[in-house]
Length: 79
Picture 1 (cartoon, rainbow, N blue to C red):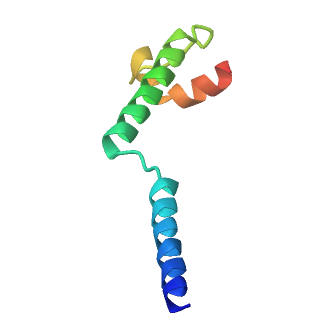
Picture 2: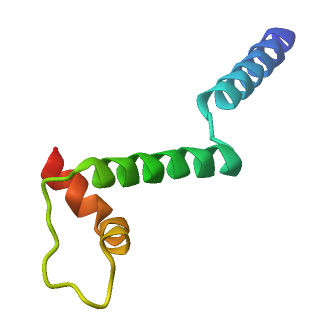
Picture 3: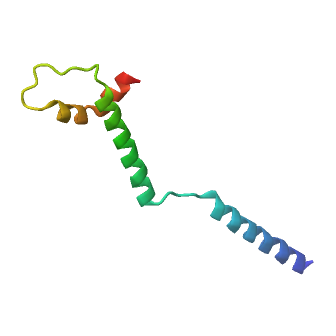
């Protein structure tokens, strides 16, 4: 009887360990950074392709710098 209880408890602990190890799949910081850089590049590309937007009257910044700073807004407008 005592052996069965210990066996059951041991089995439950092992099962819990296996489940806990496979439940968490955390991306490495390098992978996360690569993914974020890819998203930023994609947004910049979309912002540059949006030729509908015309900047008038800007004197302090050139068009390329304005587009890079407003890439999220330009992408939202484009979508």
